[in-house]
Length: 621
Image (cartoon, rainbow, N blue to C red; front, side):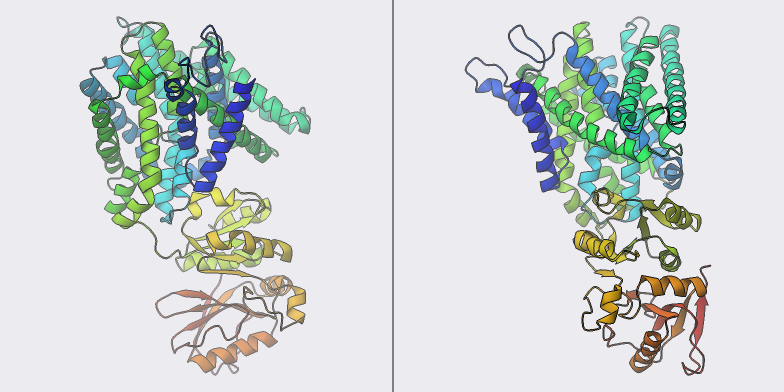
């Protein structure tokens, strides 16, 4: 009982420490597992582990193969949750580099690491290629914390994020296929028997995953499952699919749950977000337990096997030769610059799938007496721990060294996706600014996407925004919702992360009446609140530009906008195209020169009132 409670407590503590130090949780989890496992044997009186995962006759949590069954079921849930996050539209948009990374890059890793393991450690070909298949995967659970606080170009962070998500099931499938090759026997390893086994894995994996996904979706849409049972029923179906598929074709369960997750994730289900949140929480708990258990299950004899210079050589080949080679081959002919390819080649931490399946397959092969099987688990754990530690400590520094670190974050996050936000967002996009609209209203988000804007549904009261690495080039925050409390909360919560260059919100009705209570973060003017913006956008849904003659001309136009509810100033545009957000403080800009442009929403200025100034209208209807 103490051991079980201790694992959960230590796991959550490790997750908190990782969050606090902005590190991948896998790092403290593995270190804790090693401390309470093999390292503890050096200090205890009887030479036993503080946590013994497998029953050894005197102590242990799981009898027989119980640990491996638990690992299998836990990984199935984790992979299902990963499948839920895969959206066809997002995969299409990330470009051919991703496709090549998960195909060409996987092939390079598979053959390169297999050859290296065989010649460096002298392992059998079967074990060498099982090792290489296991380290194909990277994983978003380890990449996201590393990249979250590194300002990068959107395409660089997107490549790394989507590679990590997509390559998990691919790496798992390759590992399963190699394991099947080994399992059917050395004499028949590449015969028709093995090919039949592969075919069975693909057939039953896709069939069970696709069929049960549609069955569960049908039950959800027809309200056959009460809301309070939805999450637990979904969990039980995932476990059922994994077990049933595995019965028909050994090791096909992993593929089945990934397919099931992908199919469900791309359906229009009313409760898919709740299901995803539940699976994310469950995955955090399972990952915490798994890594401690798997690391604790390693013995000192296993560590002694790889405690030599061969380990350093193999690690160096995998990290400094094979990974960059795979990236440069995959990114050839793309728009990525050499320095961006170099950074992507540097960042390739391995995660839970590699460690979990390695422990599972390695233990099974050891029980069967497979030659060199004892090397699988410690070698893979060495790659996992080494790559996470290397990337967590050097990624930010390396980004600065190679020149991909954004010194100035020009991206803009707009909280709220109303018509006003969509008009402003479209203008920003047309002026080559990375803009993202965030709203919890699906209808507004869909309208934004239809006009080509980057937008996603999110609740600003949750922590999901801070986990989105595609927003790490954002330096401006604009809160444009109709709820003043939400606008104020957004500024307070996200000012440091998204508003380092400026955080702004609309003034509310009370602040408009009391002109002396003009907030420092007030947006556009102290005479325009959300209602006035919406009304102006309804009557005049366009954004215009007018060229200025100088500071006095700018101030005269601002005075006109303060008196006319149908004209809202939003940006000041410099001759070189830089856009400066106008705040509610009219004296914000004191060095406006001839050639600058005032960007405004609503009715066009009257020619006479503006002394026949040059006008340029950009319609965003």
